[in-house]
Length: 256
Image (tube, rainbow, N blue to C red; front, side, top):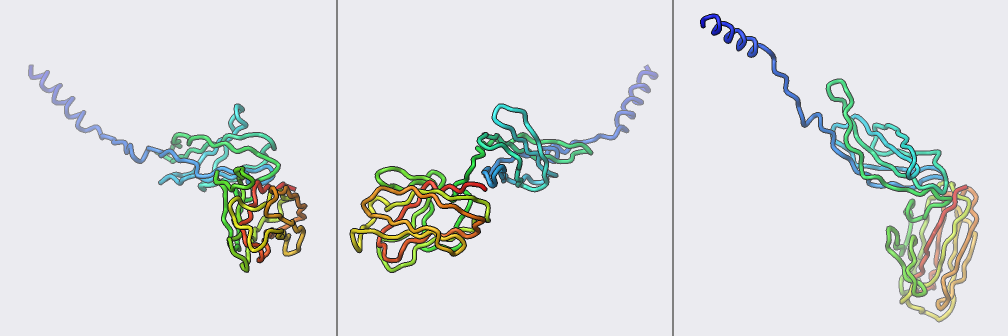
C-alpha cells in the first residue's frame, strides 16, 4: 500500500513539473478580407483594392479566366495591378490575408470573388474624374440620364437651365487611348431656352479643338467618334449661350 502511494505521489509530481503551453487563438486567427474595387485600368490589366487585415504579413491574390486554373501572386500592400491578361475574357479575382504564426504561415479565408471583363475600351467615368469642371454631374455605377425617352448609362451632364455660364469638364486620360466614342444630346425635361435652336459642344485634346458637335434641342442624341493621339487632357465644353442641360453617355476610351 505504501509503495502504491509513493508511485501515485511520484506521478503527480511529474505531472505538475511538466510546463503547460497555451495557444493564443486570437493571434493565430487570420481575418477574412473583402475586395473594395476591381476594374480594368490598362489594355490588358486590372487593378484590385481590398480592405486591410490587422496584423497581416501580406496578401495572396488568386485569379483565373472563369472556369480555368487559378494563378496566384503575393503582395504586402492592399492593392495590386495584374497585367498580361487576355482581351475579351472575363476574369475572377479573390484575395486572402496571411500571418506568420509560430514560424509557419497561416492563411485566412478567400474573399468573395469579383469579376472583371477585359475589353478593348474602358468607360471614362469608371476610371477618371475631372480635375477641373463647372456644372458637371456624373452618372455612373448604374445611375442614368434620360435622353430621347431612354435610360443612358456611363456618362455625365454639363449645364444648367440658364445661360451665360461656363460648362466644361477636363480629364487627365494619361495618353493611353487611340479614340473616344460617346453619345451627346439634350437631357429630357431640360429647357430649350433662350431659343429653340442649336448649340455647340466642343471637344479639345490637350487644349486643341478637335471636334465641334452641333446639337439640336429637339433632335435625338448623336453618336460621336474622335481619334486621340497620345492625348493627356481631354476636355468637353458646352457653349455658354446654351440654356439647357446636355447629356454625354456611353463614353468609351479605346486603348492604343
